[in-house]
Image 1 (cartoon, rainbow, N blue to C red):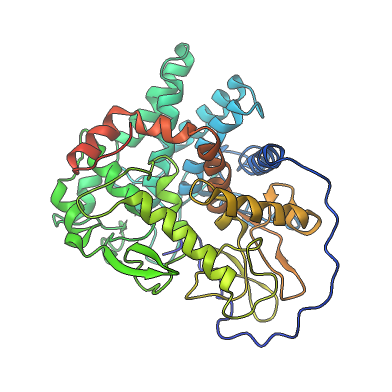
Image 2 (image 1 turned 60 degrees about the horizontal axis):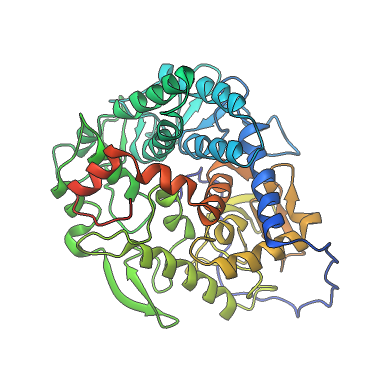
Length: 447
């Protein structure tokens, strides 16, 4: 259920690689962990500041530095939610001034307020020049409830960050609050005990994709329960996301409990974005419903992904303690062209996505820092104008996808900040509507 466009899939199958070539490792200047985290956040921030969609100020779906005219005006709704959170980090880290952030955020919120919505939900993509829907696929030309939830997560953080500021900032906070509260979450149940991903004015609920865990969509249920005017009942969450308890998985990998059922991704868990997107604001540590400890689920997911890369059953070059991380990202096609793939231990094509390890840093701090040092060691190849590139493949002559996706860059800067200060987690979890929603669903959690 990767949330970016489905470009041609990269190859799968067993490796038939030559022996590892004897290539000397590049020399790298000394840099402390703090300096490395600063650098990564500051460079990644440029995606949402320097390379935002020009007319709306929102996050572009993609950015190809060597081909800047590639899709310059397609706005990512989920990526824009991540971008709003990144702008807060930018203020706190001194990348931009508070006034600069207010001006940009107001531009984005004004665009969102006038853009196409479908029973309150935004579509997956918008045209940044006029706010009209850009179809994600033939039938997906209406409301996308999951992307809307990712955006709402960011809107909550904007509300909390600016609510006690001056009159301009208070107005901005109210604007963000009003936007997310206009989503008709309960309408997307079709009067059933589950949420559904899509609705189109042309095709209705024909896609009929029910939101069930474990994957990236948990935040949708939390936002739906938190809504003051369009809230869902607990039964919708229990039957939908939790499958009445079937979300549990008692199996283990590398002697680590999997905790939850990563549907279609046995036995070592799915792409790591499953444990990133919903938890940029929603803090998973000590977050429990009647079925699952979500902190354990997220942490174990990252550890298993790491240990799979250390084991490296396909003998891919460079996989190991310093080079790991499988998630959905750009990928390498068999002819070396750029594709897209939801990489995971069950779909390992030899392509590493830096966002996987970097965005897991709150879960696997030591392992993620080792990977970040590896990426920095190869910065001549991997570090571009908006942070580390989206993907690379050491065994294929160090092939690099010299491109970026909003939904991959956003979690890096946000999760590094949550690791360092807990900033976005604190903002989101202090929101009264969110607490009401979590209470309604029967969660225990850290405020």
